[in-house]
Length: 347
Image 1 (cartoon, helix red, strand yellow):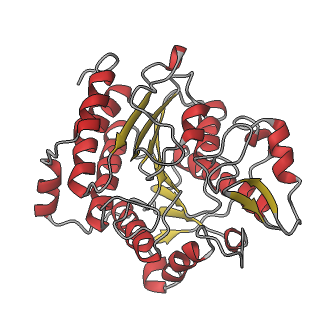
Image 2 (cartoon, rainbow, N blue to C red):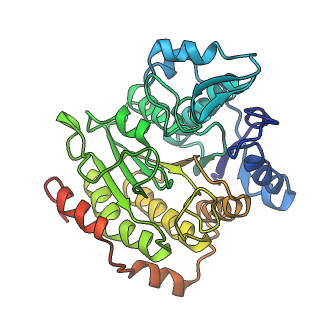
């Protein structure tokens, strides 16, 4: 049987190692320690993978920017952005993180794996074409989506981003094209200040960027409402050939950078929705890449809720599924986004 693939590497622990920073190696250590337990590890596949080449990175990032990040290799510390720094092995880790997403996309399209989760750092969704932002160096999901389009010859890729911060870099990477539908649900106002409901794409991409800028302190039922009433009908009309999740767990109720109230069952349900759509529309092609999540407890709870769904061992009771499926939480931002999206989608 095909297995859920997990992409991990000790190199990801070396990025900003021993620096006092909230995006620390501990985030992956708590996940890797659990995955090292034989009774857990036996459920997953751990494929080999290579770093992304400059050629593949440059399908998303400006060559001068890729060279700038490469120039940080071996240096004790380089400040690229007020929030983003590198350590001696950060460049290598960033190339490998992007490479993991590329490999995940390829193995999915080739039918070699069931689904995939890239447990990597540095994260990626804030990284712009020509500069680093928000702890991110290279945009892992954008690189994977562009590779799927250019090398794997897919025509439609869906990127869903539930991180509490809007994925500005991902949005800008595909703002002018219908080859990628970008759907973000995030806190607003919040860093980085992008992701308004009226940001819908441009030219050929008009209508293929969907932003749901939420107010704070929303819970599992609110997120389920957005997934049921907006993401699901739009996805069914778009008919993606691959679904990529920017999996940020800073919407967990315990997150120090958060402001939302999502818990394990909420992550389970959102993952279930995406997996069900992948099964219905694109031969189960679903992959996730780790973005934020800064409560170690919340990160572990959320990631393993997602992984349990991915390997077919849901933590949700039948009663919980029924309650989530019928969720009807009143959300002003959802109404605003739906009214805009109706110009392009049947809702």
